[in-house]
Image 1 (tube, rainbow, N blue to C red):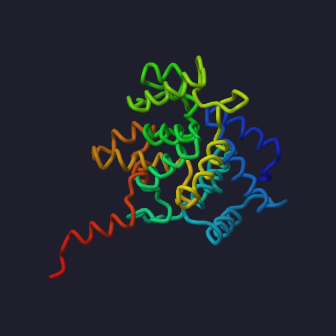
Image 2 (cartoon, helix red, strand yellow; image 1 turned 180 degrees about the vertical axis):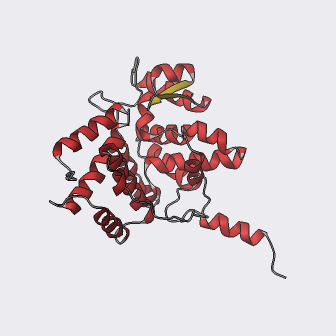
Image 3 (cartoon, rainbow, N blue to C red; image 1 turned 90 degrees about the vertical axis):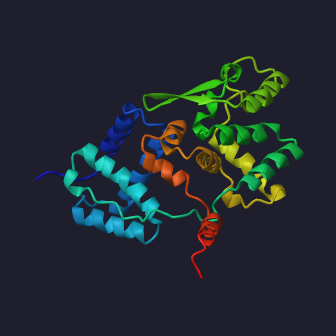
Length: 280
């Protein structure tokens, strides 16, 4: 009878498999965390379909549906890798959100306050990082592709997962970045560097953004790099109403992912309902 125990060797092989698939470092780390969570639940037991279903139920009692589905996707990917197809489980059904909760959406006005606060506090680098992410829609991991060369040409090239896409830099952003480059005497390579001369990372940016919140009077829960990407998406879609083009700009392989980015706020949704004027 086949043994269905997850060994350390299997976990190591799975990570190497993900790396060979050219998954990003962030994605590989997420798969590791999710698999570790499942193995803790499993303990010394062998995998059975009943245990995987129990694990799914356990997750559903502790996490939001979207988080549960994300963790189940990681687990199913591992089970497929191991050849244990019979243990894979279905994701939970999630009704598509009609609007984004207001307490989570970063508004244009709040974005303006963050940028102005960075200027007021003389935090030039984080102010420019915020504007760069928001005006281009790039991921925080793609900030490294904003180089002296890309600022000069007006086009950055982001690569990952075997794909490459062009990122166009707005003229006003290029002017600001060129001024910053000259002031800091950056001759080539990534524009945004730490004091040690290394490219800034997710942790650096997150911490510096949070430090602006109190003075900017913006809830800290709204302030993180990915929310700037969402603001870019909503702003672009309101102007162009072209979801296919937006998906290309964001580097999404599925339009269903892009739809999540353009969900309007509860306030805007209520205003639209009021404008229908269907009460006599």
